Amino acid sequence: MSNINDSFFDGYYKDIWKTIIPAELTAKEVEFMLPYFKLQPGSKVLDIMCGYGRHAIALAEKGMEVTAVDNLEEYISEIKKTAAERSLRVNAIKADIVEYIPDQQFELAVCMGNSLNFFPEEDVQKIFSHIAGHLQPGGHLLINSWSIAEIAMKDFKAKTWSEVNGIKFLSDSGFHFHPTRIETNSTMIAPDGTTETKLAIDYIFSIAELEKMLQVAGLKLKEVYSIPGRRKFTLGEPRAYIVAEKIV
Image (cartoon, rainbow, N blue to C red; front, side):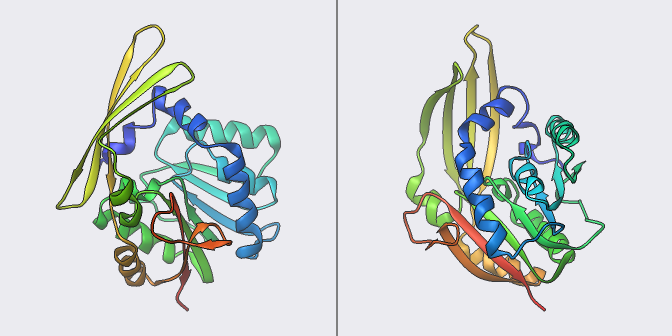
């Protein structure tokens, strides 16, 4: 089934997204993953909703064998080009994330950049189940989110605006229930006056709700951090890093 966010990251926002996330953050996240999950050259990593491949490429540069999956053809083409140019072991796949079933086992799966919150509960449960079924015994899932209930309810703003690379970015959001979600209408105005309007939906789950879905899939919530591996998450932190382990 089509997800409204399938078309959100094309057009202007494809490039805006690259500017929003600093390279330093990606580097720190990867620096955390390597020792925490005991990754070694040749370790197999699955990157779900990989976007333009900021983690997939960085992990491959450290010697990992990465399978990177996203629904946007432009991102997958970009990853393939970068991987070929740098001779990196990245298998980039365009697929429906909800229906995608890997064909091998992984030591680590990651879903970063708030991507999990694009999906309603039924779809998240399917994603968790597919991932759990293809993690090695003791393998892990790492989720990065800034839209869990413990963050979103405190930080919700109905209207925001910013300017990125000369493009004005105006957002008008509403907090809705049944299911709990934030619907955001965003208007992007280029310097020449042309505009794009997008609707995005972020589904809001509490840590407890995510823990139950993980358990159903055969995964155990291990820890939630605000700074990966350094500080445990507390109310008021701007982002969460959720670590789950496959139940043996």
